[in-house]
Length: 164
Image (cartoon, rainbow, N blue to C red; front, top):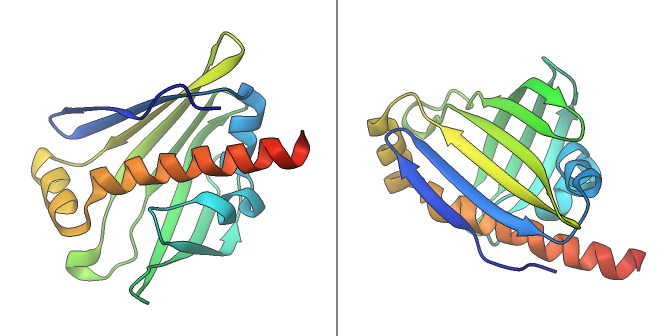
């Protein structure tokens, strides 16, 4: 199902991740926009997810808890700033108000038709280069995002088998 691994580029305060998926744009968008799907793959390796509330609309908020493999719970809040089905999702990660552990950044997710499949382009834009470095050093953000996309790939393979 997956033709290649995650291509990652870092420019100043922005990290861009790209990966091809052998699924339709519509399916890839669907698994990013439904709490039921997100619960199956969201987050780095070993994490699980509980959605507290989700309003998948322009200006809507998604509140969720990421349960770490170490038993720690990470509160998260996202505000969707622009949704264009099935091509684009933009959101602001609003953090959770826990001082140094608080993380704010913007994400842009582009679903680009590529032959029979879809290129996923995910950008994370931090307020500054220093903040990107801090979040990466403290939380392993870049590796975590690569694992996040890898977990998406595993879920899509499982989904293809169950639907196929």
